[in-house]
Image 1 (cartoon, one colour):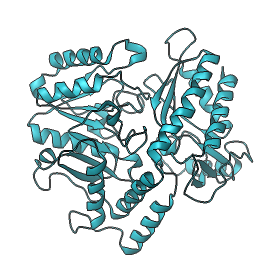
Image 2: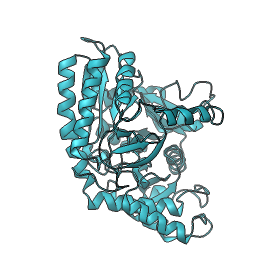
Image 3: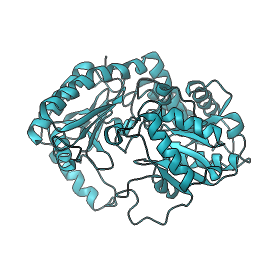
Image 4: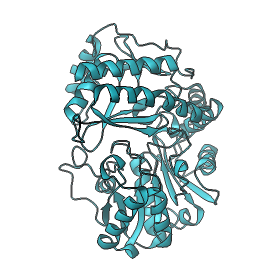
Length: 445
C-alpha cells in the first residue's frame, strides 16, 4: 500500500504538544460559547490539514487517522481527482436544483451507481444529501411500490437521525432519548450475531422470520431494511447464509430487501458493496458516506420498475445531487478504480486481523476480531466471559488518542473498538497505528 493523493503531507505520526494542544484548547473554549452543547466530539482537536492517512491539527500535531470521518474519506482527504473535479465545477456553477434545471454530472453519478451496485437488472438511481435521507426515501419508495406500510429492521441496527430512521435505529441513548414519539409500523427482529447467539446463518434467519411472521404480519411488510455488516451496532458480520435466507424469504412474500450500505459501501469491505460477499442482490440499496470523497451526497439505487413506481415529484429535494458533490463523487469513483482501492481494502484486512488477533491472545480481553476489508473491529469483554467492558474500551480509546491515533468506539454495549482507515493509507503508517493500539491495551488494562 502506498499513500496517494491529498495535500503533500508527511505520512508520519508527530506529537509536538499534548493532545489536545493549546491552540485546540483555545478553540474549544471559543466553541463552547457558540456551538450547541448537544453536538458531541470524539477527540477535541481542531484539524487544519489532512491527506493520505494523517490529520494535522492546529498545533501541528500529525495524527494517524483510523476513522476516515466515519468511513467517508476512503480515498483520502482532498484526493486529487476529487479536488480537481470540485474546483472545475465550482467555477462553472454551484447549484440549480436538478428538479428545476438539469446537469450532466447528476446523470453521470447515477450511471456509475447503476453500474457498480449488485445485479445485472435494469436500474435507476436518485440522489440525496445524507445517509438517513437515503434510507427514508428507500422506505417511501418501497411503500409506494408494494402498497404496504410495515418496515422490518433488525436488532443493533443504525439507520439515521430523522424521525423515521430514529425509529428504525435500535440504540436508545444517545440517538432516541427524549425525541419520541417515533414513526409507527416498524418491526424489529433478531440479527445474526455469531459471537452471542451461537446460531448458523440459516438458524438466525429462521428465528427472525418467525418473529416477523407473528409480530409484523408478512402481508403487511413493505421492506426488510438491513445493513449487510452493521456499523454503529458494532461491525457485526452475520453468519453465512443469513442475508441470503432473508432475501429469499422477502422475494417469496412480496417484500423488498433494502440494503443499507451507507457505511459498508463504496469499496470499504474489499468489494464495491458488502452484499457482494454474500452473493445477495437487494431490490434497493442506499449509499452515502464514501460516495463523494468528503462532500455530502447520498443515493438510492434499485430495480427500475420499483424506482419508477413513485409518482413524479414524489421524491427529491432542493440540494439532492448538488453538482459540486456529484463532481466529487465522480472523482472518488475514478480514484478507487485507478488505484485499485478495493484491493487495498483487502490488503488492510490481511495486515490488521492477524495483529489484532495477537493482541486478543495476549490480553484476554478481546472476545472477537471481526469485519471485512478496511472495516474491522474488536469486541472488548471481561476475561473469560462475554460480559461487555465499555469502561476498558473507553480507556483504550483515550490512550490511543493521547498517543496520536484517532480511533472510534461503537456497539450497542459501547464495547467495540472499530477501525476505518483511509484505503490509501501507507503500510508503514498502518503498522505504526497498530503498534500504538497494542500499547494502548497494555496501558489501559
